[in-house]
Length: 64
Image (cartoon, rainbow, N blue to C red; front, side, top):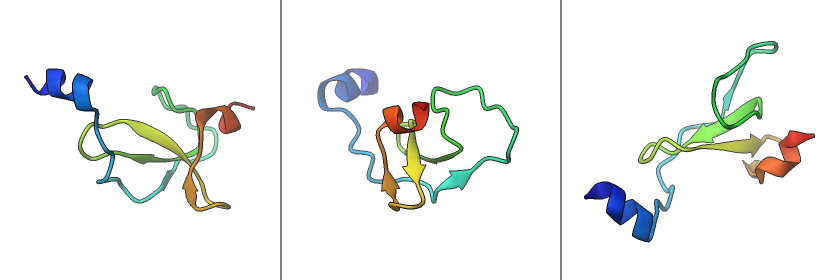
């Protein structure tokens, strides 16, 4: 039932972790390839984070 509600309304991603930075050279087996990211505590989705802008950024920016 919760998957159906998530599909219809989605997660607002209002409860997120503090930005996490991986160690250099470490490979993470997730969809986000950014070295700094935040995680939604409600749904578990990861979002790339930019320390310079201090905000979540689109994944395309970190793909390069």
